[in-house]
Image 1 (cartoon, rainbow, N blue to C red):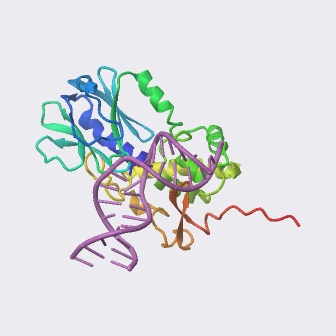
Image 2: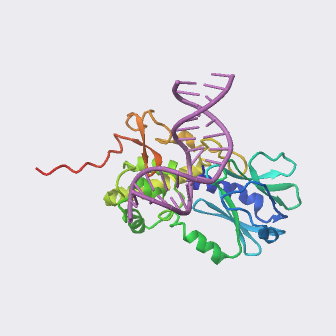
Length: 281
DNA sequence: CTGTAATCCTGCGAGC
DNA sequence: TGCTCGCAGGATTACA
């Protein structure tokens, strides 16, 4: 579910609720997540104060006093929230961390179980894991570097935007929205974008992510932030999930096709397909 | 290097 | 009403 704006919203919501509080222990459910919680980690979180909570790409990093870090990924349906301890535990809650004086606990809930919760004992170990998977954050990128990253391949633009090792944090929704703002078809070969289009794309990616964060992310089905609030940005989508509805710019019907294995929404008038090679005559 | 499909899961809406 | 099918904010792996 969650892309960068949703993950950022969770982190911002949780920051005042977690930082400075101690984790008292951990309770793990029977069903396995992508990464199973290791029993050896129990002692590593016990009575550890949370010193910081950060985001990198779509990952949530919860730093502990010891120098270890809890690394959380929300997958498609993950939720990370602080609840009163006495509040009923919802279905699909897989990991719980009682906090502070025991009146509250941090709960990880994930219907589809594509998410994960893991512990890294040192920063170098954590950095190695993340660096192998993530390119730079999409904000404040040097235009020349952005251009290099995007145009280094013949893959489709959509595939490149979704590739976390190129730019971290963009997912299916915001890739489509950024392509729309750029006026480029998501199936366009990345190396064929003009310098102007690449620059427009850089700005569009930043703009759509920033606006979405301001709107506390998008809730399509079950996303909620760290305090349980839904997002609002879904009301501002130009193309995502708007198949058949009018393009906000030109009123042509929004279309959907599969690109890079994902449904990709676009306006055929505002985002024309690359011209086919015409036969020489 | 590409693209595609399958895989990990559960739930929900569309269509019959 | 009840069933099956396909699809869903992600990431990884196998294979052509």
